[in-house]
Image (cartoon, rainbow, N blue to C red; front, side, top):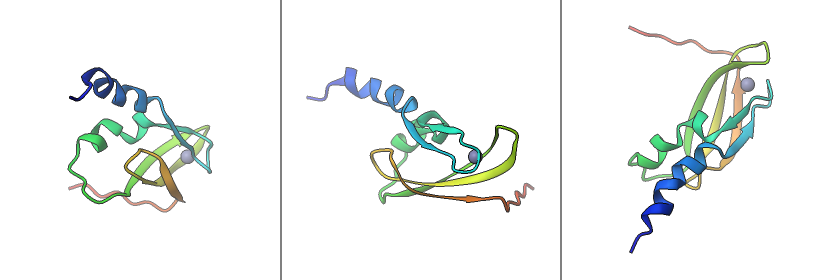
Length: 89
Ligand SMILES: [Zn+2]
């Protein structure tokens, strides 16, 4: 039997989990920043996933932090890019 209390509290706990500090601006990246709810509830069948976090912090211009997230919501690696072009139709 699944303990629903623990299962329901897990995403809440993961929202507060410190995943990484951005190496460029030192922004602390928490579970909420990488939308752990969406990752947990997605039908990803092959981990790790690449999560792109586009942000600005500490007066640094906008940049992208790419995190390689495994199934326990830990970052196994990261990359930063200042070269971004977003296109919307
Ligand atoms: Zn940053």
